[in-house]
Length: 335
Image 1 (cartoon, rainbow, N blue to C red):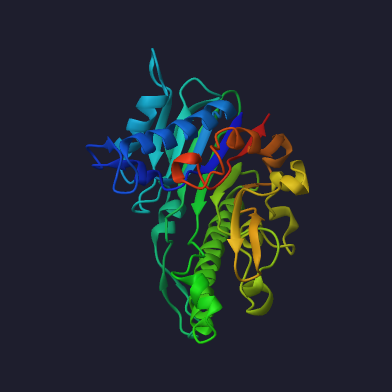
Image 2 (image 1 turned 90 degrees about the horizontal axis):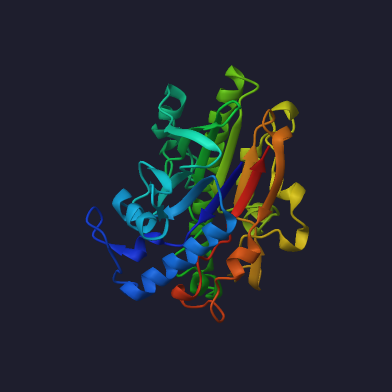
């Protein structure tokens, strides 16, 4: 059973029309949009997942169906069925199940703990020492899937708040505006931390009911191993550590299969210039799997799909239509 996760860069810009979709937008021509889509489809076909979790999907399910109809249809009809996240505006979450794959069924989870993820909770995200109501930037998408011949698995797709700060580099490089950048960057990281803590509370609730729960959390968490300036010096949290769990409850810690199966030089899913630490083209592990203790023993492999991704790069990949995405996909394989 192969589960693939991928942040496909701004899929919404491939389309116009929402519920009456067509290829192309104000950002990409019809030809450019279909080139992007063809590159993404080639990567997906190369990897061959049974279940595909997506971030930055289009805002309307009809637009996703246009993509699937163009690139993933055979004589029996659509190859994938899709479930769309409930919010996220132009960057929706999706889970796609391959019709003839290893998972025989998929359904959106609507139990009380999952529905409660949509509720606000108290958090101090702006550092004013006052608690205020906060909710997810993009509500996690939670589905239950049925693998053939074994127990169901709950899949949680998380795309946290971005660390992006508008005009961030110019503010950082301007001594008179650097503190303005720091304040905005810290608020973004506090929001990411708040989302990580809330999701971990949800996972703990599930494990309190059933220690043998089979759960996978995946997605673009906009954070990863290591400590950036804000975690080192401004005492913000690392969201990956939060989601994986506390060392004080070792039997509840989720496993990170990419760390076990991928060699250090290849352990990245995106490359971005880091103007704070002054590292150009910095490799970053932003996309993750976290596997519950009961499911960890059946993990056979995990990988970052560098080869499939690189095969679809044209030139240096600078133009949007010259790359399938700005993130590389990740996979986990279960027995």
